[in-house]
Length: 460
Image (tube, rainbow, N blue to C red; front, side, top):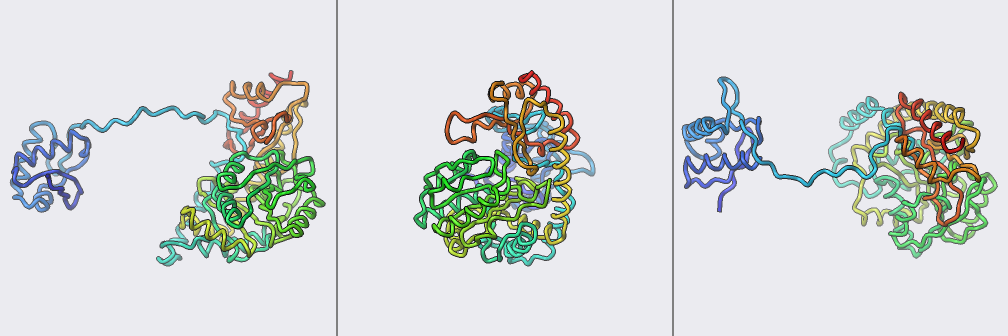
């Protein structure tokens, strides 16, 4: 069997037996080049370093290099390193498949922020500060609850900005909201809670995640006042109280009181998904539902709408009785958000840069929503409060179907979603869910005009 050798200076791999001598070494290098392990244009080890590693005379390696240069495998130049001169036959990968859903020219998909507005410089500064200030021990195997620095920062920020009743010991940092709802669903299942109610309509992906953790999923109607609390009959419910997704309504004050009273009296748990609570445009943001019943309401927040989904940062503020079950579920899940991202977010919030970014984004999205509303034809009816990153357009009852509207948008390369996939039952009204945040600022006017053209086509 051939021995494996590695050189110092520049690491390379050769399968070579010393007993094969100079000819064997030349054959090993030829094989490395032909197989693509030594790639065209790459420098090769110096004769001195390779001879040292292989335990042979430098002259042996020099003669091998000279022979291979004459054969066209290597390229030498006076005063420059020797390099590979020819391309080998690299392993062939399967043909790259075109994405199923190529990025649309006009991105009006909901649930996405403007990624071009990500505060890169502020994030770099926050990351640098975190690296300089954080002790080495913080980069080990972290607590299942998340970095203590971020949990302490979130406790203060959520109390200040969202009215949440929290302390760091009751906060767990998750690998995105999907992970958060998975670990909470699992923890509730372990406690004997096997049914979870969701708003109807709601995002099917999250219902599927809960079901995968052993929850029986049921639907609860939503009207212009939000979740119909009188229809609740489950030990747990997920609610988007500040800005219902996707209808855009807010949970009315009497129903907020009724929901927390129901949870307290029945011993049920409420998961408050505050996915875009920072973005209210017509008035001050509605405070978190959690403050009305901190021991019955789980508060969930995320950086995916304020910063970027790719950060994979979300958090739960838990009732005391759920801290240990959720910690155990986190340990079982084996998933953690990157510690450096957690520390950088803590620095971003503590420095005030996060608040400044949110306020800039709020002003931009407010402007976009107003411009979109002003451009819409009278035949479509916008629904929902002035908040968030999306707008629901209800199509006229005697007009085109949702499928017709989506087809008109697709012909114009508009990325958009329909309401039909959010319902938990059939025969419900259709509509278009327009995300006005995802499009880069310079392209928003074009995206809006193209959408209006599609709407005029189907409603004229």
